[in-house]
Amino acid sequence: MLADIFPTGWHATEMAGVYPGDSVVIYGAGPVGLMAAYSAIIKGAGKVMVVDRQNDRLKLAEEIGAIPVNDSEVDPVEFVKDQTLGFGADRGCECVGYQAHDPGGTEHPNMTLNRLVDSVRFVGGLGVVGVFLPQDPGGPDKLEQQGQVAFDYGNYWFKGQTMGSGQCPVKKYNRALRDLIAGGKASPSFLVSHELPLDQAPEGYKNFDSREDGWTKVVLHPAGT
Image (cartoon, rainbow, N blue to C red; front, side, top):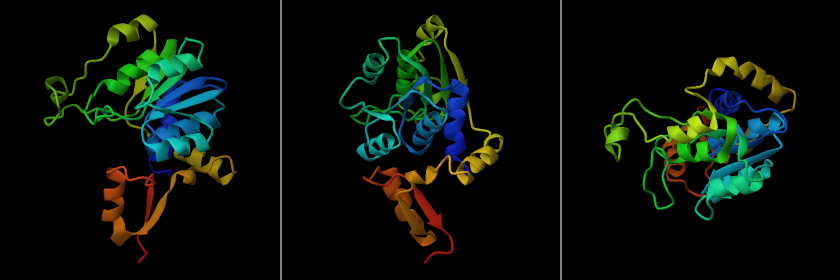
């Protein structure tokens, strides 16, 4: 948890500038997205909304005190605005990246990024930790193949938002997060669904990658048999 996903989720909320009382929207309820939601809750956010469409992941989001938003059932942007008197969330985190896709499975590299801009209020803060590559030769469109996305910059500029992005500097956070865990203030292990011996790693990766129900995070034990 401290080597990757907890610091990365925390980093997303740091870049977004989450303060106590803020309303926060998180796009993506994978391990990093759930850790971003958990980090926002630890920081005292007044309302945290998590957008995804995997029911097992949304259930975990609800269990930690976030509001689950299934984007295969509702328009997430309108949902967030309805929850915030039409203003949009104070802060938002993008935890999906260039492989974002619609409920039908079609990839849209810009989908969650533009939804994030649209669902965060004027002068709000954005933290983007979802991966966007310098180039993706196998991408579905020419822009993505060159590492570009059709970003709604006009809306972003008009709303005066600020954005932080990039890979997490893990060592900047992991000791403080370790102490939160040791002090009983954080328990990121809520995310772990399976603990497997190392020789079952291929099965764990396969089930997680195919979004099998209930496979939210796998811990591998090298000494296990």
